[in-house]
Image 1 (cartoon, rainbow, N blue to C red):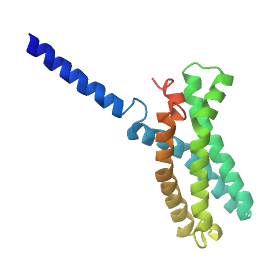
Image 2 (cartoon, one colour; image 1 turned 45 degrees about the vertical axis):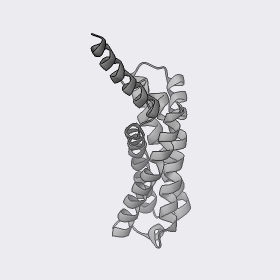
Image 3 (cartoon, one colour; image 1 turned 90 degrees about the horizontal axis):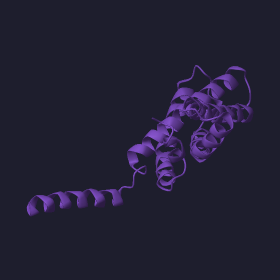
Length: 169
């Protein structure tokens, strides 16, 4: 019986050590999930803004501003939808969405738009150009890669997506 108790204790000790090295909510998997959530809203807004601005013949600055505004709008909307569905009032849900998504969306938009601005001829590409779609897709992938560690850092400190996690059941 002592051996069984000791074995169980050792196993429990190993699990405890594992938890210390990988606190709940700060895993890379959770950061990837949070970033995918952010990417979904950002991509919808970014693509829609770029398509609208380009189709209307707007210049680069107004098109980029529209894309960023729509990225934030759709990013926050996806979070709001889930939090409201969990029964939180609108005011509380807005606070949760702002706390959860602002830094993640801002980093994603900075990287995404920065890549497009620096990519030769990408800002002048038209909807029918392969360059328009390729630069947009690649910029979103780069933004995702850069934003995952940001989300991991925030989640590990109980911020960002960790604020929303309690409403995802």
